[in-house]
Length: 432
Ligand SMILES: *Cc1c(COP(=O)(O)O)cnc(C)c1O
Image 1 (cartoon, rainbow, N blue to C red):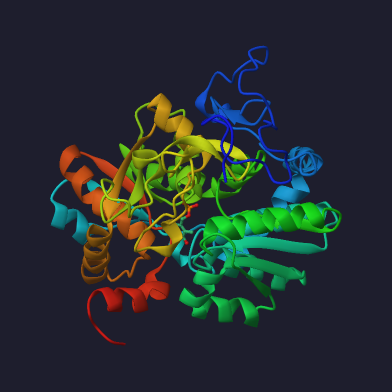
Image 2 (cartoon, rainbow, N blue to C red):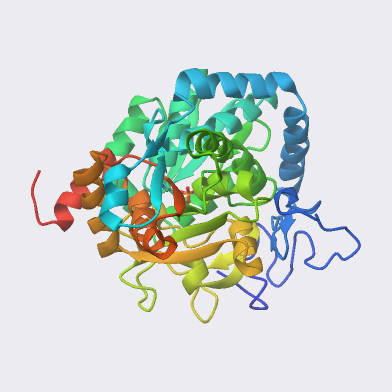
């Protein structure tokens, strides 16, 4: 898949072997942002990460999207429609909930949940899908495509497409189509067309490649809705901005309830969109630590995990430079996690930057620890979390003890666990 120098990474779609496309990495003439929240720079880079490593055929599309997004951001009617849908369709603001019994159980810092699992469709993904589909409509696009792994982003995209009467095509790895039948059926009910992808290992990264290919072919009428804070610039930025409603609400809510900012924010990381959405509005608050939790699978010292920062190296995939799971030849390794939503072999470039600069910290959580946290949360709080935030919760237990009783933690409960009950039953050796 990759050719040339180790750092060059995957060849952009349609590009000749051995040629580096996209923005050069060292453009010293352009000034760098001087505060955390102003990144990316004019080239779409977060330090040495991000950028837009795409073939020439895709370049006009991503430039067009960047311009249209800048116009939309400056247009109050765009924001007003977005806000209206977030309030009346998604059900925002999501509550900020004091998890009293878990706090007692861990015996340390006060733990709050930002309840994004209460959103329509059961997770944070809908925030981003609404933003991108509104952009697509502004741009006069009449066909929506998306990639999906576990099917959650596919369902969220198909939902918004149904709401706006737009045809929706979802690329999904063949293996995932087989593994995620309920979500495949949901998407079909919502009117989406599912395209099973058999290339590679038939999983998320292959679906994303196929979606990019479709986009190049159907430039004129198609908009590609990316499901996490990854892909070529401006996607990592705009996904972050659409998800930042989580952090803006959280900031206001915790100030109201506790009269101060939290000591630590915690979120699970797949590609990093719910985490960056929570973190971003706090980046300038020096006293607020941020901890992302990657999926440690069977352990980061085994080949079976999805921890791109903790167990990967920088490279290029899906149009941006970031940390990736790769073998010694630079081949992308399939990620493993008990949670289908976390098994992306990369991570959004802004997290790579926050990791390298030390502004955010990243830890891991194994399948087993997540399964335990899933059960603990269900029993003590009456909230069945998705397996993704169960990863974050496992580390919240440690962090609460580290901080002690005066500490204050906000964790993003980014999804609900209804979708996971079958797989959890299997892991617990039970039958439903
Ligand atoms: C998709 C998903 C994730 C992982 O995606 P991010 O972009 O890292 O947020 C995490 N939690 C839930 C509930 C998801 O559906």
